[in-house]
Amino acid sequence: MRTRQDIENLEDKILAPYAMRSKDSGGRKYREEQHDIRTCYQRDRDRVVHCEAFRKLEYKTQVFVIYEGDYYRTRLTHTLEVAQIARTIGRTLQLNEDLIEAIALAHDLGHPPFGHAGENALNHLMASARPRLKFNHNQRSFDIVAGLEKRYPDFDGLNLTKEVLVGILKHSTVYDQPGDSHYNKFVDEGPTLEAKVVDIADSLAYLSHDIDDGITSGCITGDDLKSSALWNRAERMVGSAWEIKDKEIFKYQIVKALIDMQMKDLLSFSNRKLKELTFRSFKEVKQYTYKNPNRSILGFSPSMENERKALQKVLEKKFYKNYRVVRMTDKAKRIIHDLFNVYMKTPEQLPEKIYRPDRRRTKTEKYKIICDYIASMTDRFAIDEHKRLFDPNEKV
Image (cartoon, rainbow, N blue to C red):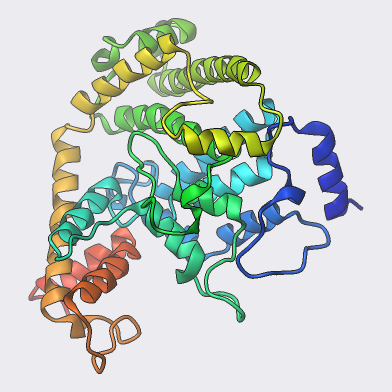
């Protein structure tokens, strides 16, 4: 039988010098005894999978709201795809897969209902407060695992390791901004390479899988994407004849080719970059990422990056601005605004465990309570709650 110590010894043999080893973790806020057979990052991964916020991702929007159909990706399926892609990158670059998986599975826990439309709506509402507040889903993901989830008798939160917490808080992509730099004691802590892998895997998954959902929905077609050099290369790899023979097979093979091209470029370019930087330990990596937050270590070659940006622009123009998507996101924002405003006007409508009417609170405190409550909702719950509060024919 393989014990935790056996796994840690194996990490010394198979991981690169710059990888984060489980035995070198910065530890947890609340001290716990080590597990007999699982490393600290394996325990973190398991805690995330078993938490309430993770289960709710099944009913939260990626692009399409859940009532649009069963095929489209949800925030949960996107999270699983990011974890799978990130583990492949990590394994190839000899990084700690368990740490990567823990960060990947937790990176979107803080998303509110209706995806980025919901996040933008909540951020707009919070910005109207005095003093000015804001909503950031990375910040909320951190808050969930650091305190809001209540599963253990001795502490609030999941008591995850420092490396996972930093990876969640400082997750960064085109759509994801890191949490407040002054928020906590990790302000001077640079993320590990494992955290940077999750950032790049998230970006890769977004671009490729949104094409799948876009084509399936009919919001975009292959013809819309022919202005993209990356799409055309993928089409040549698959063979355009398949588009006539079997459109479903063609779509799946195109997405597969897009992921494969990006992955090979990413791994080749990142491997060269790591050799140039000659990191000798995880500590050197964290120092580098702290001092150079905007300088990439892992990434795509300049030519691939340009092709990705061009394809992204096509998606933004043809897919994200399609009338069906705009109509969905607009409706989502209205639901969030309506719920927020009615709760602010009469907070006694909130569940008592969320808002105790016998306690006095400042307006800022009300803003935060209501924002947290709405952010915890799934798409379905938010839609049903909106009906209960605004549909005169709906039974309460």
